[in-house]
Amino acid sequence: MRRRIDRGRRIAGAAFVTTERLESRMLFSVTFDAFAQLERVDTVSVPGSTTATVRITYEGPTIDTSTFDSNDIMVTTLQGFHAAGRFAGIDPTDPGAGHGMRVADYFVQAPFSTFGLTPGQNYNVILQANQVSDTSLGFLPTGNIGSFEIPTPVAGAFTVSVDGQTLADGQTVDFGDALAPLGSVIKAVTLTNTSTGAITPQVNAVQFQNGAVTPSPFSILSGDVIPASLAAGASTTFHVIFSPAGFSTPGQVQSFSAAIAIGGTGLASVIPLQPFTLNASATLAGLTSVTVPVKGLPFIDAAGKKVTVKVTGPGTAVLGFISSTSPFHADPSLLTLTGTTAKTKVTITSTGGMTLGGLTADGPIGSFTATRTTLGGDFTVNGGIGALSVSAASSGIVSAFSIGSLTSSGGFLAALVVGPAGAAPPGAVLGTVNVRGPLAGTWAINGGVHSLTAASINPAFSGSIAGLLAKMVVKGNAGGDLAALAMGSIQIGGNLANARYIAGANFGADARIGGSNDTYGPGSIGSFSVGGATTGSLVAAGFDPVDGIFFNGNDVIDGGAASVIKSISVRKTSDANSRFFAGAFSKVKIAGKTVNPAADIRFMVS
Image (cartoon, rainbow, N blue to C red; front, top):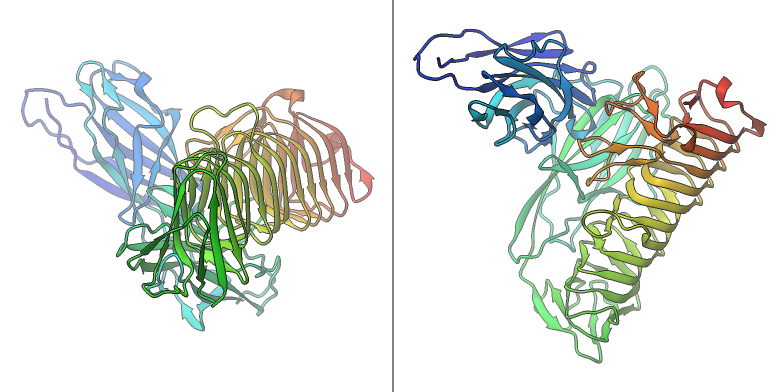
């Protein structure tokens, strides 16, 4: 018997979407085909939900439930969003074996942090090939098994303008063309509170590609501050920088898109009040390549300042310029190193300050010293780096097997990927880090970190450390998300705001909370001190949300008393939205007073 399924969609309120079988007809009495269909999607709440639960019915004579896992389905959109469904278990409506059908549930992480950000967005559910099997008929065929739509969030208490132009929800802003990786475009974004009371804005600039967070060419101008509170009728302006990077082929054209969601903050999910999308494209002109001689290569940069690049030890170096004149009067777009070893030293001296568009090295580097140079693109080393010293990193990805020391005299806004593939080594793959400006970007460290010092940590920062973070010192304010297998001494000199710092967690390959690769387990923190106040933040050891959703009532502490925070000290206040979770606390002091965690609602003790 072959079945034909015509699927209809029924929207019941704003909380879920159902796709039901409308008819089932006898066509040919030949074979019974096993197939899957989307039955229902339950979002956690109205638009703004961070996850959705997808219910799938698999029909076949002997569906093998042992093949159910987090690789079964993919949720996609025409705009390029791809997210795997994390297998959540057998649905309560499942009839059991012998009934010709089995029902499974999957969690799906929302794009751009929350569902409903893009108006009228349609999500397709795709069954992946060679995943779900029927023991009689084999693997179920891949294909679209249904779709759903999340209602659009209602614009709330903000108006948004870019360079003075007022934007509607989801409206596109054209950044125009730019020569990558040298060119950059800056736009002024103004938020105005149109509500009758004070609001707490939050701005997230995130780029998604193929379902994963990727290093975005968009960043917030260093020094711009989003206020913690915006009074009724008040406005605030910050600047978004578009700095394309990662271009390597002359004539290459690439498009970028990012979403900036403005919404409330706190421990609850961020509900977008006013979303809009920024689009940009860039073309890389032909490169003029120049080999760096043994004595070094002097040239004139884009600002008219003299620069010298010198390489000592094994290896050759080639600089690529978007210029055909000599002297070049241009910043280099690419530095290509070949034949390098741990004895290779690269030195860039400058009378001013230039931007290096990108670097590739086919082997390790002993040292890279460019104290008046900003990294403006991908910096990729196929091996370790003994010492890396720059004036700043504005964008791109810095990646290496290990880095002995990393120093930035200014802000470090690039992504950082350090460590070997596979299981994390037992020791530190990132040694001493000293960032004298703000720290942002996404850090994926497959191993431990010896010490990390920064002037401040941007709210957009997210880091995942697969080993011990032995010491971290932040001289100013700190925010963002941070996971580590364990944490030693954490010192925040200023305020801790809207942060989630979790020992025992790992945020997966994308180093961000959400998705099927996040793991939670036992962890510990030696000492955690805040020189200012904590607002809307989570500090935890062994915290496990169980279903990936924070603070929905089923959270647990893994590891029992071994998941300990030995010392917590907050010099000023901790608001009611701050949380401290651990299996045990040894010493807690807030605003000069000793706190009993067992009697304080801000604390969870297993």
